[in-house]
Image (tube, rainbow, N blue to C red):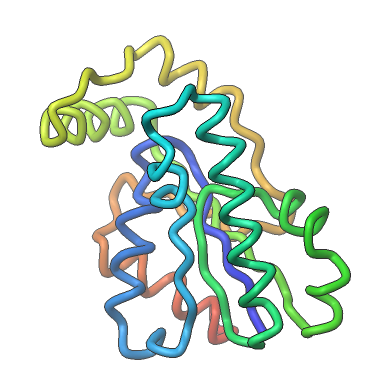
Length: 168
């Protein structure tokens, strides 16, 4: 079984890839656990409480679905957090964690952030804050790196699917 994590910098295409993969017939038997959506349930709380309760709810869901022995895909969580919380279960049910790390140039990330913020009626993150977030990012060991600046949504999905099939 596979446990796939999509990670990366802000506005790098993780959520878009997540939702596009969900539409693929090849992925129809996979369980898509939308961690960012789970955290949004708690948007009326402080950021600290939202993250804490979001993680607790996410882990509660995973606790119930890991024994189902289905392939799982999620985003915005670290391999370390999953292994710390479910190490024994992952071994028991033969899960292998596969991380796809999305990257995008600072300029492209900023453009996407502004576009997304305007669409949602939000204030965009400052260029300075975005650059600091990019610099603070830790890339997961053994992650498949996908630089999305010049790739279409379909190309990104195809990279992931080929890798999951064991083809590079």
